[in-house]
Image (cartoon, rainbow, N blue to C red; front, side, top):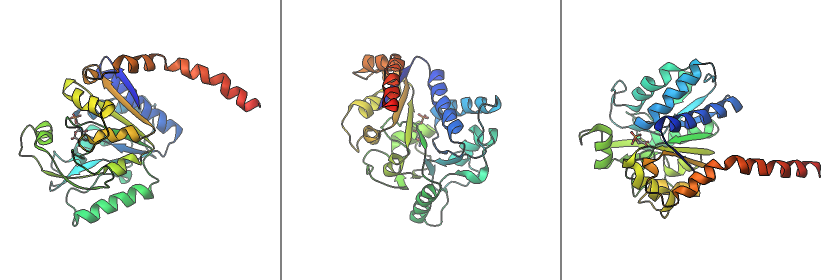
Length: 267
Ligand code: GLP
């Protein structure tokens, strides 16, 4: 895991957005896994800015959102489809036929999960998955006790998640979410978390045991994960100064590997 700690939220957004832009420059038909939530709004803002500045072209990109509430009409502003239109899709040149989100009103919930899984496979799998973090350690809507091997299926939201997302317990209780097994198949993962409210979940995810009680802790098993957070979210990390040191000296490592690679090539 690479733990990247910034002083401001803007730097967190900037770092995540620039990694997405770099990927699309390298692979113009990249498949992105997208997330929702307040944290992600800043990333989308930076991606829109990059698009407007002509730095990135989304026309061949495919996107898969992590999750969607069940039982909402498609025009309900609480739907993640509506969130994505508002915050991102309507402002860049993504092809609408290549933006996928689980259906909020499927005829058959199990089949919808299987259809979504098959679609991800058909499009070649997810190159880069963006994740937020729930206060209870959830990723997507995989709440504590979720199977660490699960695929896209229905989950029941906790009171804490409803309160965080709607400010009351009256929001939709059920959601379709990519499973942790699905998320772990992404080739690269970037998780963002901001603020003191997330500090406990961040510490459990990075430094705690791998456990379904903190679903995000499974990311310790993924080979290419970047955890990009601000100082308050990092405040309970025991090895914080080590992570900061590693990040500040990253370029030194890159310099070290350069002559060795050259030598190997010549031999
Ligand atoms: C929702 C989403 C999660 C996201 C979380 C964080 O619960 N389903 O994928 O990680 O929100 O949201 P925020 O950034 O608003 O704290």
